[in-house]
Image (tube, rainbow, N blue to C red; front, side):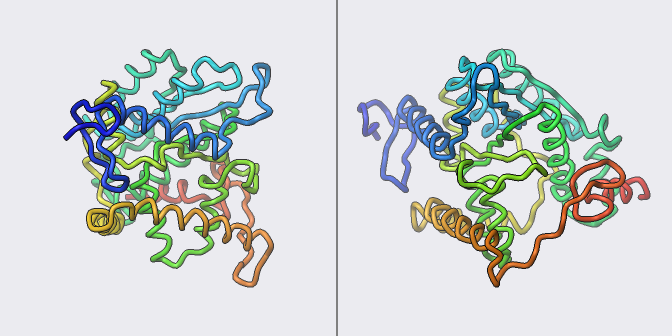
Length: 326
């Protein structure tokens, strides 16, 4: 199998496009799509200047997605005085797993000379995920606890850094799964929120001071291609799966989409193209207070930690109370 672009040995066949690509042209293809997404999402504030740069926090876990994202952003913006970047790594307290991925984060940050901060659940919340999984006071998947804690720390430290944007390494597969889950759950309000939270171009979103806006520059690139990209560029990457990963429902959706993609190449792209258009329409409808919309609950501050919440005590603090009582 030869590369369609140069005739060298191909390492990948992208069935959705029919392209056969060698390592170098796969690299170029991935970077081209990420750069296009950066432009289309107006990731760089057009008013940013060296004296008043756009500040970005990148969630760097050491896995293939966040490593690829950090590398590409540094390639493009590392010497741009209009952008200030910080890589943030969160240590959940998973013995062996996160320690190894932290090594990859440190190596990459040193290679790129990018500012890198590490925070942990143990230091911030006095909990470790290994212990939480063992006690499981709420009788739910480990990812349900971890997702709440991770989001809280990403938001807290992005705000502390004065970040204008929070960037995560969600890929095409991740986003197609989330889109399908929202469809199947009939959660139209969540579809609308998704547009303003992380999908819409920044110049089309409804801004909020409650949270640092997010962006997902890898969301047009399939997971497999990101893994190959890291291999081709010999990037320091921790490829192991989290030992506590057990989101059963998402796993079912993942398997369904994988089968759809096998039988109908391009299914993931089609899901996301339609979803992004619908999310924009839903967001517009909710903003205008259409008949389908119920007023969103007002956000206040958690009486314990000050985080934004619609209740007196935020979800994170309630989980911590439950864990402490177990």
